[in-house]
Image (tube, rainbow, N blue to C red):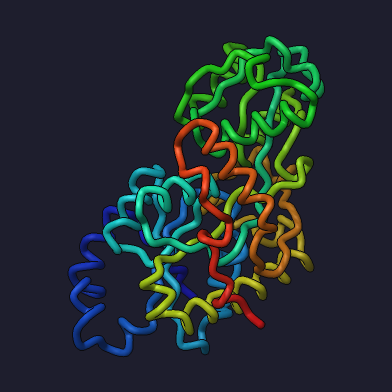
Length: 316
């Protein structure tokens, strides 16, 4: 079947021709009512949904799931704010900041893709405990910064013990790491895997820290009006996760290469973490993010994890 991945430039045309915003309040066709638009960025987070689309798990469900691809968080967040997508894959720091700014978003499930703290080949770092005085590339006040701080705390170090370098673009952080300009940084796959195969080392990860850090969010309006579709999406997500548990990266190489940015040099080393059935994250994972942001004055210190979640769309 033809996979439904929509680049952002096509979104305005789609909104004009297929899903006019006025349709939320007016007469809507059956096709419009069955469509669910989810914003994604190139990451392993949405791999179960990409598998579900490829395998045709939604074909007879009455759901038309469209994965709208973005290449910057700003574009994704703008589409969320304007209602051009119903939901998105987002990290918890971004969710808390959006919620604090008045956005009516709810986390409907966690995601399972790992995020790594990688040491450069010539950094001399082999574990997080050795990061004292290291030069670490981060994007300030983001999930990358959060994960670095959590890794430092777990190694009995203080964030002030390292020299943080502000680098927002992930590819540039990778280049600086491999070029020796920084000692460590946070990277998702496939860049983390590329760094490892070129001599870099994983010194921590959110999985090692026991933290989930990303999830799927929907607007409250979408949850109210499209709950049945979101529930069908999660039925397909769970089937996709089951497929991944039963198969190997070789069986989804077309997705890893075509959608996630893996290149042929990684074909023999491709990996993915076990994808569990869709579920909400533990409240303490969200609380850790809220407290970290509140310490920086970025969110209300009284924010509670329960404000950010809605589990009503998950399969019962």
